[in-house]
Length: 157
Image 1 (cartoon, rainbow, N blue to C red):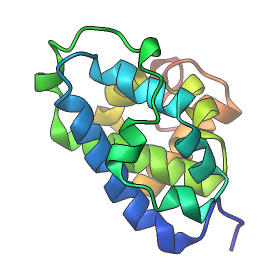
Image 2: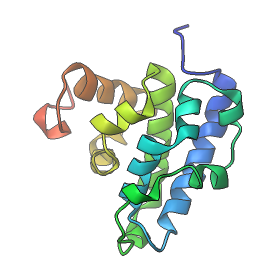
Image 3: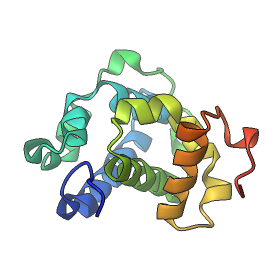
Image 4: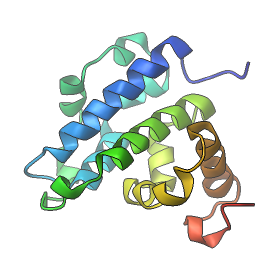
């Protein structure tokens, strides 16, 4: 078995936690959903600790995660939050968590290469496959081939 970011026992609960966190983001009345996801991935010290496999951080709750975000990095515009598709939002949480766990790449770097708007956008070609396969495709396209967008390379390669 390949070395992972942290013990697999934490993976399912971490995915569920991030689904809940992303749901909290859609209910935010001040800030844009995508900027909240990006600010969380870029600025949260708890997320950084999770990336390193800290059991202390992996056992935090969604309210603690919400309090770990630098909101000065967020866009003050929540008008689109109510139209975020919950299925896509859950898929995004799943992919970000599984991708980070599987490849041991810091969340900051993952989010830098695949900002939340881009991940939301590529749901439609990738949701047809397993999440593991989606992670492999994302890794190949954005990290190996250094593409900026899924449209720069055929997903079927």
